[in-house]
Amino acid sequence: MKWVYGNYKKYAWGKDELRPTSKDGHDPWGGMGVTLVDSLDTLWLMGLKGEFDESIDWIKSSLDFNTVNPGDGYVSVFETTIRSLGGLLSAYDMSQEPVLKEKAVDLGDRLFKAFDCSGIGIPCGQIRLNGNPAPKNAGWTGGASLLAEVGTLQVEFRYLSKITGNPTYKEKSDHVFDVIKPQGDGLYYTFISKDTGERKQDKITLGAMGDSYYEYLLKCWIQGGMKEDHLREKYDKAMEGVHKRLLQKTAGGTVFIADLNSGRLDYKMDHLVCFMGGLFVLGAYTDPLGIDSARAQRDLRAGIDITETCYQMYIRQPTGLSPEYARFNMGGTSNDIQVPGDAPHYILRPETVESFFILHQLTGDEKYVDMGWKVFQAIEKHCKTEVGYGGIRDVRNTNMRPDNRMESFFLAETMKYLYLLFDPTSASKVDVLHTHVFNTESHPMRRFDQF
Ligand code: DMJ
Image 1: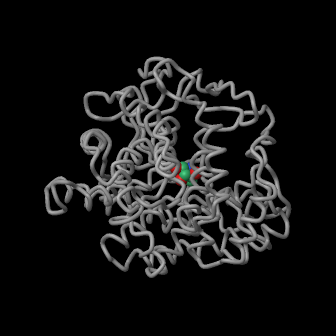
Image 2: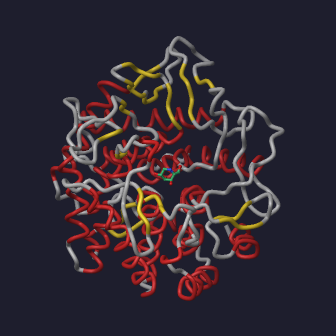
């Protein structure tokens, strides 16, 4: 982290991202120092105080949301909330540095206008930060709202209410959980109408575009001190649905969570779904019925099994890195995990090491440290460049050169989770069972009962 952040400073200071092979910076998010803001709490937890202070100086002198423009002026409400707002809030929670709160309120107010987009309070996915917000949904969704995008803003806006004393952020963002109704089995459609909350397409997934809706049902319940029963009930009902309709096992015993398209199972699992290992186990350890209950034991087992599958998605490849998604051969034994031709790449994603961290913290099983170390070594071997880390185009090919993109989540999440996995003393300061809730971008914030 010290090395790569030093290179970010040298080659790309204040840019959204460092480009790891061309050794320069670029602004795919419109120019708001996304890597810098997303990295703040990682620096703090690692004790890199000098780097943290220099970053605060940049925020004071140069972070200006009026000038953000990714081309057409629109930013993603979801990405900006989880990375930038979440990054500012978590770093504020840790350091109490006033400028972080000031910038968080400024950014939060600009993003919050997305909630005015429909009559029923479902926020739009895109907004302009500079003056004329004009929120809208992206054209490629056919005007639909995406489940994960509308239900992964609450941890951040609820926290903003907590530190400002203004309840509106919490009320309006919480309202989304009331208007979006599950189907009979507790699961949710991925593409929904912003005007009615009803389904637009018959797709159900815990992968891309659906994932963190389920995560925030549980996390908001934990954040609020485990008192908002309706959130826990929605989460438990959804997990029932996952067991009933999506959880699958190959002949070789590999457990995964399939997608459902128009009622038909698609036997694949995105790398993104690997967060479910940790979420299942967090849900089990906080289950109001107790960890020994049948429900908690069922979810504990599922979380352990999914995490093992995600590890296998890495370790079975020649590079030791996982593809973007895996296909499952239901009748297969040793070859039941397959790399798809259309997505054999790895882009430094964190979800598997996220689950290693949570399972290690909650179960105490040291095998997750060894698994994390293997993944870290594979990243070191195949993704490292002269100045940073890049993704690789094919995890089956050991001769690939890293590509020229280092997403901010690599420093915000992948590096942080690995560090916390290897350093339990630091991890005990962000205890997921007793004191903190991590937003979906790995930004820990104190729970409301810890203020
Ligand atoms: C991150 O921005 C977050 O973890 C999000 O929830 C999903 N996608 C990326 C990482 O893969």
